[in-house]
Length: 266
Image 1 (cartoon, one colour):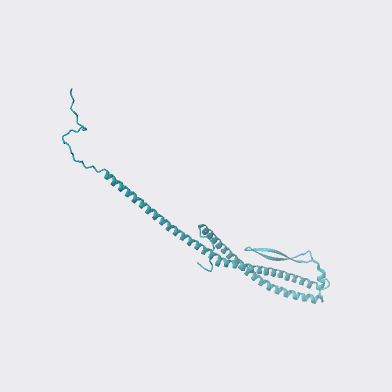
Image 2 (cartoon, helix red, strand yellow):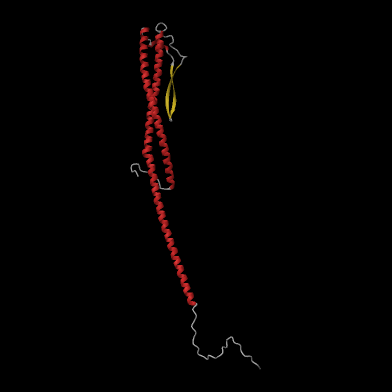
């Protein structure tokens, strides 16, 4: 029995044995499910890591193109149009929606970007000059923001998955190295105690059976001795008595005998 793991403080009975066996079965099933969950989440995290790498590379290319596009706008317009755009924009045209994705019981946030086509507060910007460059710059930065939203969604999901995988792995380790061995040691302890009780019960029954056999033998011996004593007494009573010697005339008739008397004639 492992001293480091120990056992549950239970009373060794048949009912406790059944409870511990049920607990062991549940722990093994839970360990298997947690193991599968950890493997699924780890695989999904690897997929998210690959997508994050692709999104970062795409983000670098898009931001490079956007920077060149902004330089073209500054060259074509001949000044800073940021103040004009800020004053013209009243509502956000680029918006983000959030939803959740269920991955093996873990809800991961996902951000989706969409553009409101009905809102175009600075549609007349660049009407005088540089309109095409401004339009291309706006489209380029819209793609950059979409890539940024995608990257933010992937990185958020990665952080959540990393924390969940750590928790699941701790539970798997605890179930594998603490809960299951502790339950198994408890079952071994209960079985050993029940076996000891069975041996004690068998020894007790053996002693009781021997005592009963001795009592029966003594009772049979007493009955046999009583029968022998009664037989000896009956034999002594049935022995014939010895005849006493006669003191009178041997020819004297027996008055009380069975012979017939002579008739008396008057």
